[in-house]
Image (cartoon, rainbow over all chains, first blue to last red; front, side, top):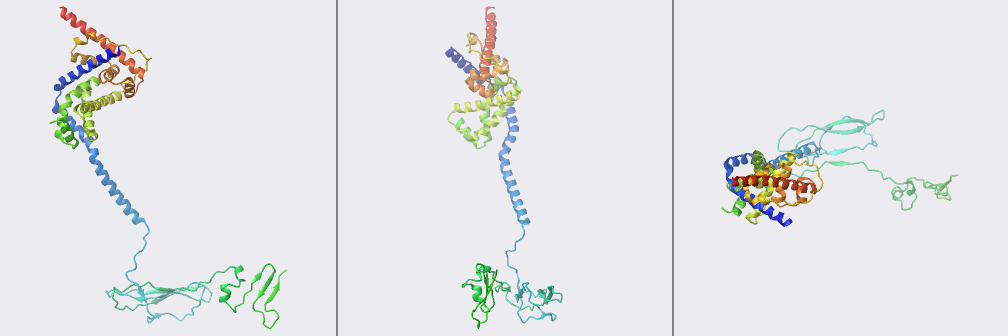
Length: 222
Length: 184
């Protein structure tokens, strides 16, 4: 039965294929081709538009990159074109003011002129110094320094301004003060210091009178 | 120009080669589409859409022989027709109980011409016609048909049996008509 159906199926197929071959002339080929061409651009443009979208993506990427670069804080990597350095012979106009040393770090700038070939007048450089005030408050007085321009070859090396920084005190723990190898103790020989021994509850002093029996004064703490 | 050369040229988007291929297969494919879709305008629409997809798929197609090309383009057309019928929701078939595979008695088939067989097929309801085309003409199995149409295997079998029954009636009717004609 299955063979019969298979044979019938093949018979059907063969007959229909013959019919399809014979009925091919019924179609208006040229009109159908024109209709096909009108349908095709909708499909073909997808491949051409790939290039368009790639180009658009590249342009957008460049724009985003440029915006990011502009929005980022500007970091000066270049050295300044001109650095002013003032030699000692420069005249510093300042009032006679007692300058007191204060815990505030005083910044001193020594500037040496390095000029360009153009003879443009340079603005005065303001140097700030802490001045002592009767009230004890630190006052800042601006001192104008007028630079003298010397004709220096612009191709000369540009050096950064030299700044003198106050000496920074070394931080030492109190327990380290009693050690014999204490660098601070070595450095400050002669200066009084009072090592404390917690176990014996005694305070020693190195300022004892040499004439006494004990070279060190011991103070007992209850 | 041989089909192998036409395929090679068409891969390089040659319009002349595409036109030659279209002239070769357009008529056959239109008749094939009419077996599935019945309406002449819809069948032409499916045929043209099928050719657009065929030309687009040529890049990935590897030529082996002429029969392979014919099978490939036929497959594209059938898929296009089935997609059209799915859009029309032609396969909303209520699942039926599985029926036995009843063989058809096609004694009157020899008396009918190919055109008459074709006309009988397209007269069938869309569900019967589609399953009949896929099973009898294209040689697909019931599981494959069920997968293509989104129906159960039992539904596919029952639709085929009903198609055969209806066709048999129509063939007998036609054969009887011809017999009467001959007697007269």
